[in-house]
Image 1 (spheres, rainbow, N blue to C red):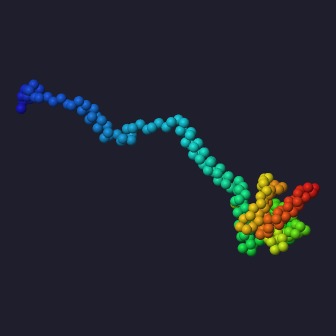
Image 2: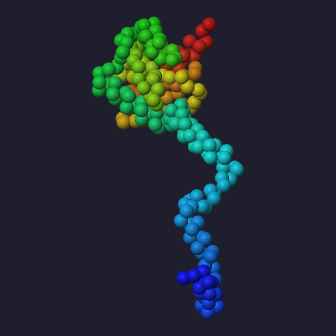
Image 3: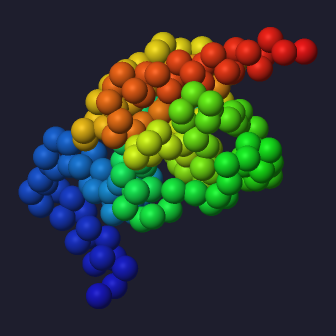
Length: 224
């Protein structure tokens, strides 16, 4: 076919052929499909802008939560328990010392032997007094644990009754008299120390021991 014939055919097609107009919006749809096929959806969507206040609030929130948790843990360790809870622990320790036949780590009636024995074993020096003249014979001492901390346990005897006296540093507090598991308990604070006495003696006899010890402590404090 000659170039003349090609030109004539092109003229005939343009004049006689039926033209079909593309549907409205076709070009836009084709462009959108091309973009979707070439750009990942996650990349197409712009990342959400982090609010400025979140930049400092998030780490503060994390720190605050951790600090609150730490404070609660420290509080549960350092704060003294309620009198009922301490009384339960005192009675349980008393029973253990009797069942295990482990009343004393240092066995002596001499307070000048018992008191120095605690040096280096505790972070405080427990007061040790001889109350034999009042009917309460010192027989020794041992280490024990009350409320999660090491304490001094001094052992006295009143006739056939064993008296365990637990001592540890504490601020001033109320006096307490209780009965736990059939044992008499007497608790008080004096001279910067917490005292808890426990025995199977009667409550009146145990209060007599507590009063004798308190009188002796006051007398020692007033001695130059």
